[in-house]
Length: 303
Image 1 (cartoon, helix red, strand yellow):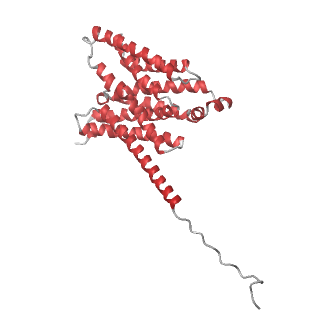
Image 2: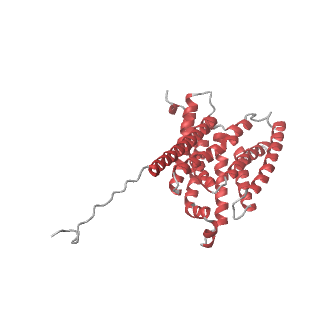
Image 3: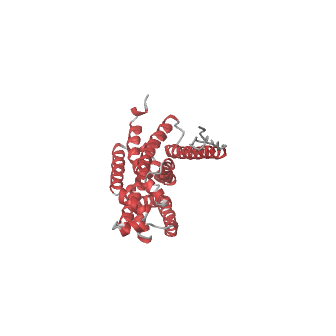
C-alpha cells in the first residue's frame, strides 16, 4: 500500500512542505547574518509559549505564535539596528528557560490531569503525523506566507546583511528590515515546532541553509537551494519514518538534513584536496625551455 493512501501521511507531507520552505528561507539568512543562536533561542521560546498557553487553558498555537514573534521583536529592539547580539540573546534565553520551567510546573500540577497530558511531549519532539486536514492546510499557507514575505524583502535584506553601513547610507531601512526578518523567523519557528519539536527545530532551520552555503557562494542561488533542500529533506525524513515505524519523524527529518550537510562538507573537502593536489603537481612539474634557433641575417649569409 502506498504511503499516499494514508490521510495522515498526506497531511504531514502537505503541512511539512510549507514548514520546510519557510525554515529553509529564514534559515539561509540566519546563517548568512550569523544569527543561528537566535533560531536556537526562539525554539525554546516556542516551548515556553506553548506551555504558557496550556497553563492558562488557551489554544496552544496562540501561545506559540504570540511568544515567538514577541520575543523575536524584543531581541531586535535590544540589539543594534534590529539585529540582536549574543549577549542579548543569552540573557533572554536564560529568562525564557526559567519561564518555561515555571509554566511546565503550573501545567503539570493544575491542568495536565484534566487535559491532554501528551501536549508537552508533542511540543518538545513534534507531532507532524498527527496533523489534521485543517492544521496541514494552515501550516502550508503560513509557510507560503512567510516565504513570500521573505522573498519580497530578500534583495534589501541581503544588502543590509552583507554591508550594513553602506546599506544604511544608501537609504535602506536596516532596522525595520531587521525587525521584519525576526518576526518572520518567529512565525516560521512557531509553525515548525509541530513538525520537529522545540528541541530539534534548529536542525531543520540551520542544516539546509548551511548545506546551500557550502555548495554555492551565489546568494540567490543559495536561497533557492536552501528552500529546495529543506523541502526535499522533509519529504525524505517523512518517507523514512513511514517505512521504519519505530523511527520518530522529527528524528528522521533532522537526521536526513544533518547527513546531507555532512555529505556536502565531505564533497567540498575532497574537491579542495583534489584542487590542491593538482596545483602542487603543476608547480612541481619541470619547465621545458625551448631555445630558438638563430635566424639567418645578411651578415651570416655567405655570398
